[in-house]
Image (cartoon, rainbow, N blue to C red):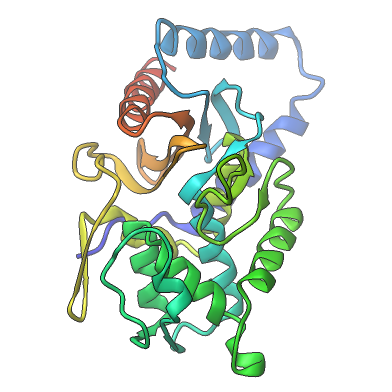
Length: 300
């Protein structure tokens, strides 16, 4: 069973065309400005009278390279387990998928009990899938300790986090900074990672372009690997027909976070991100933004 993948070429072409259009229309007559004003009016009418619990929200149309809704979208807030998107990126770009890794004791001691056992051997790609679909802290920590194993037979999660921050800088995620690979609160008053709703959308957009297979598993309700069974932490999978991928996040300092990708047309992906909601409110917020987004495209 596979979800429909977003064609990288189509997304890239659409984004390229949007930039061509932007520069080509720079000095066009007032009629173009009137058209832009009409589009802005459509956005305002589509997203008006909307109550959100989230401290920040962002809706981004990948095909046009344009945000269609913003609420404190550049504010730096705790990311919680949305951090694992970057963990997956760094693993993908630094570790062979076929590599098998052993689960260290330090990983099993992380918050949450997923059933992973110390000394158990996992293929990197399977462990990454389990981490993303079920938001496993032990899997994220194990991957962070073994992603560099090919160099010296061992790895340091701190070295891995350095790679995460280096990648964030390269991707121009200006509000993003990681303290650990899981997103768990680092202390009672320090989050495990910071970022903005816009930065999260940039991370997801990057994955869709470079490594779309990473998010494929997040469109499933469940995953079974060997004797392990994992359930998706995103309750909207199966409830929202157009949802193709997503990632949850929750911690005491972050509250409820959620990022999803929906397909509003033929390979027309839109990213929706909410930060700083509540554990249940994040699902309501995204569902509200989903419905408003559909309304926007119907009226535009």
